[in-house]
Image: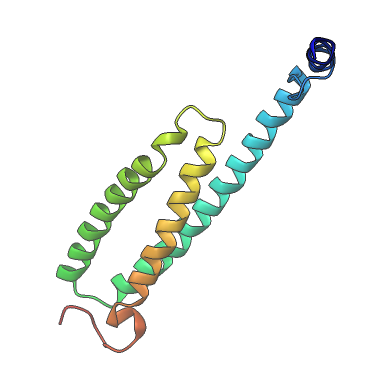
Length: 132
């Protein structure tokens, strides 16, 4: 039994179960994370643009009073999204994937907000003007 264990330990020493990370491999991981973060950021910017188009349309269909209310509501929602995504991604802080995970949360919540905005009667077209 002892020669078997010695052989096992020697084979593990010579051929580790987990290959060691080389600087080149680590750099590739960093580049991959940076690329993912850039792609997620672009997607988040696109979602923001889509949301702003709908908000602009809704503002054009409302009175000044309701434009002010919509703007105040949107400001609160942006704050909510920020804190919600920070909370959801707290376990990733410090990880290479943090920026990507955070941006993905922003995208998901922004498209959910777009669906909410699209259900407003003035945006759906079922009301001629909002807040009348």
